[in-house]
Amino acid sequence: EVQLVESGGGLVQPGGSLRLSCSPTGYAYRRYCMAWFRQPPGKEREGVATFYTDASSTNYADSVKGRFTISQDNAKNTLYLQMNNLKPEDTGMYYCAARGGWPCRFSEPFSDWGQGTQVTVSS
Image (cartoon, rainbow, N blue to C red; front, side, top):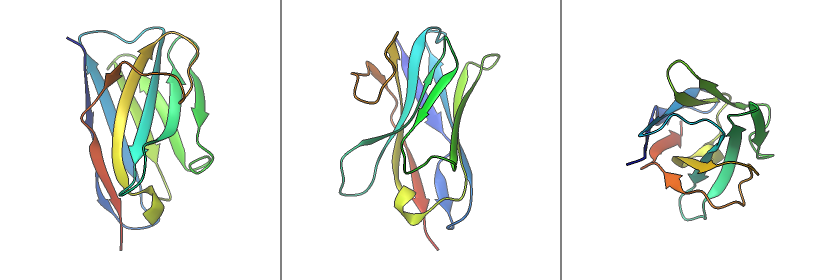
């Protein structure tokens, strides 16, 4: 059974940083599109960043460009989302997701999802 386990969320002040982690179990993600989504309170889920493992290509939502970085550690089979200069509007539940193959876009259907980790940006 494929599982995605997120960690690293928490409460942080505006301007602070957090690093989220996503560890897949049940497979080693090769030629997968990995992504982070978030759902702000009272709003719909939105894409944050994608990472295509076969080419190490990335894509970001305009709202996080220059502040967030998605990356992977092959040795640890772990996906990360480094979030810097956090803003209150970054608050939400963050989800790790995966789908096999290409294309790697937020609009594509993702087959595997984690349980989510809460990020709260507040002073």
